Amino acid sequence: MGRLRTSLAVTTVAAAISLVPAGSASAKRCAGNGVTISGVIAIHTTCSNARRIAGDTIQRCNAPPCRIDGYHCRRLTGGQLGGEWRCTRGRRIVRFSFGD
Image 1: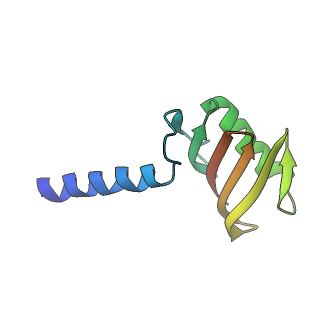
Image 2: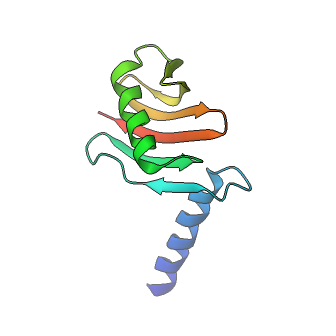
């Protein structure tokens, strides 16, 4: 059981790292809002800014792609009721999952 748990932990960490571009030491995993937004990743920005961009994107982006406070946001997967999003502004990147 201990080996299985360790193996799962290593796999989970490897999967999370694969979402982040190489050489991106400032990537952070951030808490979502606990309701509809999860899996927030902030690269070259703060977690509070990433959560704000994620929330604003869900509320204001009716037809992706769209612009939110200078960030270009597009839905990577999913539909109106949920999916994965990526917002970029220069080298700043916010990724998150949304599900209603």
